[in-house]
Length: 246
Image 1 (spheres, rainbow, N blue to C red):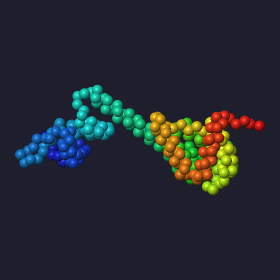
Image 2 (cartoon, helix red, strand yellow):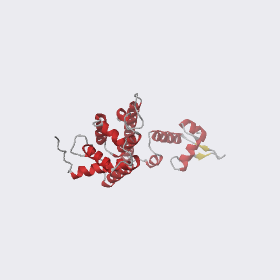
Image 3 (tube, rainbow, N blue to C red):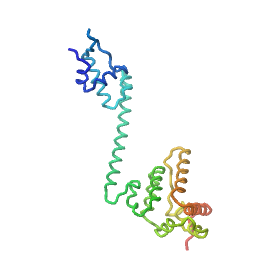
Image 4 (cartoon, rainbow, N blue to C red):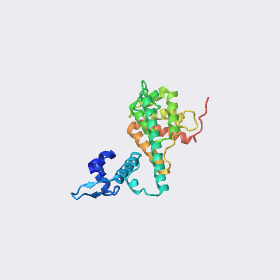
């Protein structure tokens, strides 16, 4: 028994266009033709089509289907690679589901990274934007530290003063605020947060720091950026030491 192109396409769950394409790329042998020129497909063609459909259904690219021969080690390597890709995809989908579950809770905000919804209400748009950038560039441990600091809200009054600082703030105001901010940028104090880039190479880590610097200048006014700069300079001048207490 033999079949026409349309018949074998239907039997195999393919389409006539797909069958012809498999001929073009060498995945499926051309069948013999009848005197009238029509192709007549045999059982071996149907078997091959079903094999191709099974492999592509498992995620094997057509190029690798074509390369598969009698090399069992080579086939096993291809299957292991696809399995690893599927595992990564499943993990990504599970992470997406967890994030969607968090965003479905009352009060959750899509404007901040997962885990920051509890503090988002008290953040302004520029703060939210900066945290979003931080989450992309810095380690999970760093972001956990940022979140804990925001949840603790160690100095809400100072936060508001910094956020409301006008661009034309005078030198004395800037310097005074910088001195009050030192405990929050000084690595030797309880309130500071050390941001570690996710990047695995020095070049990428430097690019991350440069991106943050650019974001600060874009999201905050010149007086606010100047205050942060002064606070870091004071901290460095103090050698990162914990300030003396009365």
